[in-house]
Image (tube, rainbow, N blue to C red; front, side, top):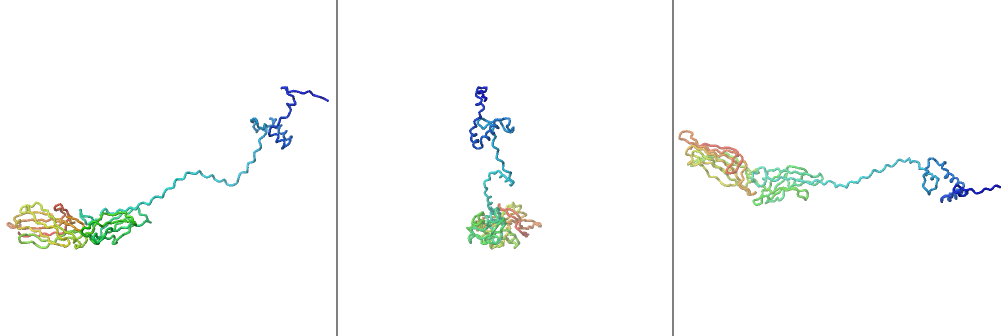
Length: 376
């Protein structure tokens, strides 16, 4: 029977010790229990044979891991889904803060700056005549189709202040700009001027109002026609002075008076320095009245010439107006003394409508002309 002496390694360690199998790492004992020693031995040989490493595996392993063990195969990936991919939600953007709906435009109404009949001369307080229409423009903006209309009415109407209609009625509803017709009905009584107002309301809201006005008729449009010759101690002509009321009815002038204004020019010859007597205020509700234009015989001594200007003014108790030049009431008054033959003199007196100014009062031309010649 053969026997062998113990052999040592280069380091002097017994060969048996060198050939003793390595102690499985901590996880190896569990493998041995699960798979048996042969399986474990095969695993050890795989781990200890670098030549048999799968070239696709990495050999750089940190200490403390199972040297040479392959990682467990990865779980198979699930098959690709055939369902259509759900599109990714777009990135959300911050929503803008809610905006308030635009405010409805405010209703605006513009009424006339003055309720004044076009027949009113300069300086006349605001007023309209009775019986006749006076146009008034009304501008409306911002009125929605569903909104209440703009209602026009006359505020302050009474027996004392006067009354008026709008388009023939007490009130008028408007939904757009328009020109309405104001007509005086009851005239204002003296002492109550300017208490009427044209107003615009929307429901209970007052949108606009005019300054106060009155209802009053005034005289206008003078005319002249021949009445008679003046003879005796003076020569000349009597003429019919007529005028109208802007209401169309002279009787409406029962609270008005009219007066003449006469301004004499520089006379020549026998009429140098000529002047005359002029009337004051007289009732205006009686037309015509006779106007006398005479020249005393004391002036009829030789050839001469003079021209005077005549304008009528009026006062109105309803509105308180005083000394207002009447429309179209201007006249020229012309006196000519001539010598038609030696030793004979003749006076020609002429009154003719003309635009003129007398004592600071100006007016347009009255209508008509009268001229007569008399032997002196």
